[in-house]
Length: 340
Image (cartoon, rainbow, N blue to C red; front, side):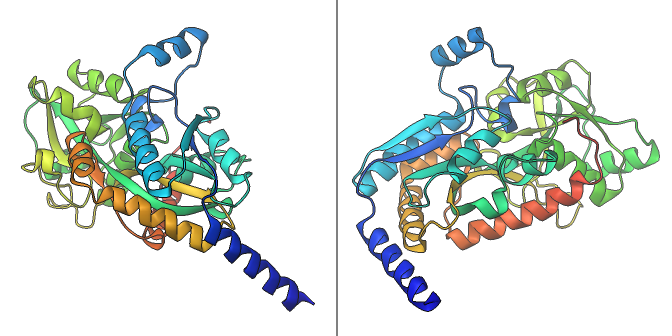
């Protein structure tokens, strides 16, 4: 009887997937209008803040979701409706999707901290992203830049590491917030080099960059999309890129790996997730349509100009990246103290 029941479930799943999609798809956005916590920090939501978010220019994450919304709607032949669910460091948005029917009609647009960091920081996470969500596909990578003020004496990564070792605790670095990818990138550099650099927490990329400009900290790890608008003014310079590859928008800037820390690779990312047990045929279809959108030249150009990198690939590729980051950041989080 168990074999018969299993066979019936497989048949019903295949039939359902073959008919997909028959109605509108809902895309859950767990970020406020200001953007992801990796860039904008964790907002202090108030009535005035909500009003300001509604009238402000679209954030990077809102722009990316709009691109996905339009591309998927055209490919699927059904509307894709965006629903914002903002609470609990994006955990509530992830839980909403995890508790939805596994039929491909409710998807999550998430960043790396939502999936690989915030659940670890919460002793009783509202959602187990490792078992309750399944990767559909990565949309874009977000490079992290190590920045300094231009009037600060130029130093290479190797020189910074050597000075930190020689004078422990003398070098501070800012980040977009505790648990952000930029924060963990700094901790990864300290772990891989044995250089005791000190983290200073700022709530967002802009405050972290301002701290560099005003001399509160020497350095900061900041997402490249937040840095690019400030490069033409000449007050901020990029020391090195944390990702394994250079970015076309700042092609002359070497990576940390190229600067002497072999194997160093850290970056943020954004991608789509579905509830666990969503039929594999539906996941494959969504992944195919997402990759087809990322193959469009205008979208590749738009993402690159904003400091991102289009990241087409299979759902298995994305799963491997998620698991690698979960292991990498999990190990780092065991060595740092973060206020919950």
